[in-house]
Image (cartoon, rainbow, N blue to C red; front, side, top):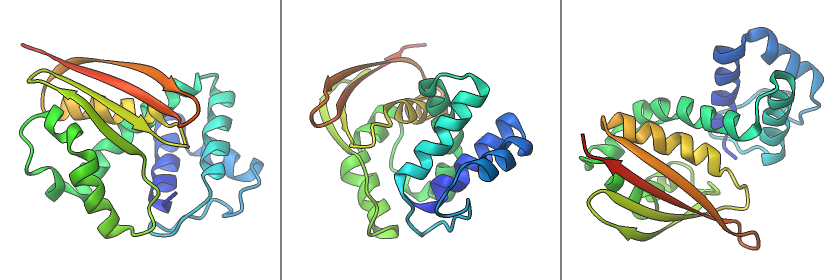
Length: 181
């Protein structure tokens, strides 16, 4: 996993819970990186799991809620750094539907060795998108946070549901519906 995600995680923890918690985590958890992350370098996913699990335990926040909050925190940073990617989109469903065939292509140009989840569009109408998310890392709740912020970025209200389809290939299906205002 790329270092910038780890940097965003420590920023999220600091902003949400204070610098003292970040210091505590980096002191208590035996991280191979020692908590020093370079944006374009890769680090073991197990470090992210260790950090998020520790925050969840220390703050008594369900892991799913913490990951969703982290996704919501990361979205504006990604948009700011890579705003050229979303200029082709005028609505959130098209942006989300374009993850695999547009956004991930752009990500791979920047990070050739990026290990990205797979998104497969199942159904798209004007106000509804059904998309399958497949990832060994199973960060579906992080993805929900990103999706919610995508809706907000386009000033849309909507609902998101998720259903775990398989444990074998780690596929979760998201159904995103836009509510007309």
